[in-house]
Image (cartoon, rainbow, N blue to C red; front, side):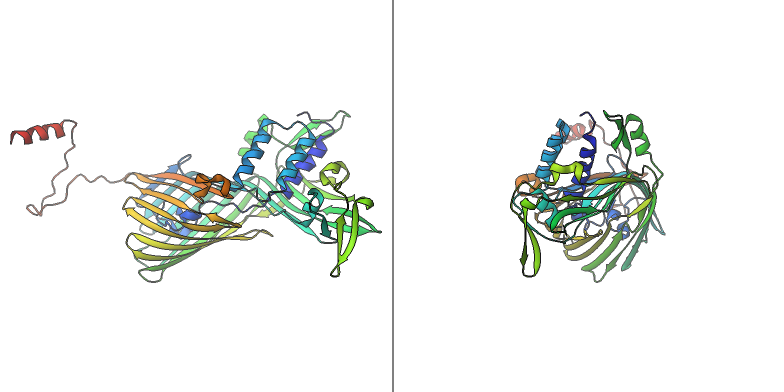
Length: 496
């Protein structure tokens, strides 16, 4: 696509897409909270930090990755359209109109790049490097639907619709510690975090339908705070237009960017109430990031006057309403007349979405445990809650299955499934927040997947067999079994 005079319109439209069509509640891995002996369960509660070996190590791509999103079919359709190329403003407009019908477009991708755990008498220590990409927004409202959807006929005059949004990409370096269990009832954990922000978009934009001298207008105001590289393009008239984008040289500097620092902390505990009952709680990502470079925020202020022949005011139960008399009202048909986009290079900060976990477990027998887990994500104007009821089945000492039911945000048809393998060399896990998204994608709104593995380093080998009844004080040395040993033993037994 060639950028010219239309680039301003498309730039505004893409910002509208970010701000007005997302409803972010995606966070994967809820099914693994109750598996407390998983090597990276400290992701959910720092008090769960533990290790079967003195040294536990993992590195990308094995260290652990989780991905969560909803409306998977719509996301796949949008990605296909974007990747195939959009060559006109009308195609962008069509994309936005389709997206506004599906408010839940969310994604969170979290990958561990490196993890190392050391077990000592004083407790467990862990160092971790991870990469996080997420976006959250709350956009479906009366004003946006009234301006875009022809079938939405009326709106309350003066009703303000806030459109908060938060898109983040950052790298995290952290050190965690948990107290040794030592058969104590209470275990405590803490993790200190250093963040390096790569890119951000934070919206403080709002809109409303206002009355002015017996006429009506869409009024928008607020700031879209951004820290992201931009591209410069020369228009046909000689002016210069900037838009978010990457050049070959800016990609490397973006990924290695350390100019946007931040600090945070995780806290957690686990308490053994009785031999059967236990309770745990954690608070994650209590911190913020200061954005100091690649600053290209924009102030959005402007009005779009509605044609008098297209709307009709009325009074319903003492509330002034505005009703369409024509389907000709469309925000996307008049992009260039609405916003006055003013650059703003001021520094800003963003609080990270704080996550709170609480878990209650009941051990029915050594092989079965019932788990009730709650997760609450605190994010300005976009708080949401998730709840799961699952059962852990320890089928063998090396294989555990966790499954049940979960309500995740506003989605209620979720069947979580987690598979956990505890081997001699390390651990392997794989799971999904919603098995139905794999079996019946068309009936599932939410999808979440997690997988990873670790390795035990410098494990002590057992070179001797245990004593026998005949020789209680003698430990015979193990003999390495050769390829022919089984055949020789069978031939030996055949002679006798």
